[in-house]
Length: 363
Image (cartoon, rainbow, N blue to C red; front, side, top):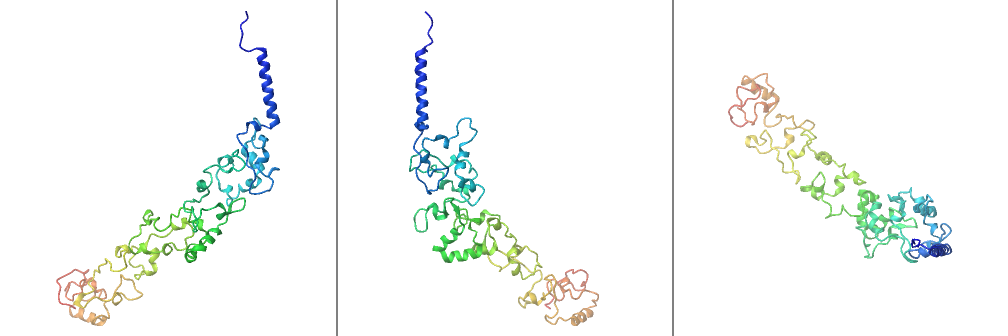
């Protein structure tokens, strides 16, 4: 007897008839028998795209969206060929799709076959992914009225373009005084500094996280006092960290003591200071004197004069030193020899560079 292979002529005929029946069914139904579910019916606009007003009208026409094998065309390309309005947004950064890095990957956010009333946006691809557009919705969960935010509260039209003016208008409606002051200090380009997480809000932002920790009186200052003219986050980092960056007009020393204010001053207040005068300004037990008594206006603080105080006049000083046999000395540089302000100090050695002798009586 001949060996059987398990395949008979009758079996082949039956298989061919079954396959023919399936192909006929697919052809007559347009492939709908393999559809994973119904298509969405209706939309936000009745305008026809690709000759239809909703995906439901494409039922049975699978190749309208799905590329056939070997066609060399992707499904994403088919989407954009029909949705010309979305295609035109891709080059516009102010439009929803123009702000997405993967805007041409339609299936990353959109889905179908969920039924006539199902959403075309994948679960979690909406508000949760808003950060991809450069603005988080962390601080915009509910409006000031307590209701949940809707897309239309910030976006308008079918393209969901964002109008920056909506930030100002919304916040003015319930924060008018604050907004007036805030706009004056920082300008109206809100998103240049705010990205939706309120990171600069009081209680959330710590200046210690920057290269300039705030101490003393600096802790109580308004941000705009130091960040004058700032209009974006990048501008905040340009504020000077040097004292004179903010206090140049407060410098009564006119820069004569350099720019390191911290050498004498603390951040708590300008006074008291840690500066100690090398010359005892209470010399002669007459009490402290004003700086300008010795450091005349218009002159450097490294320059001084003793003339005009006590009985000090150029003539009297010259005569008195002449009586002591002292001549040729720099008589206008008193501290050179009288470092403590005492008359007999360095007696007999005046003019030799200021060597100190025993202290005598007060001048």
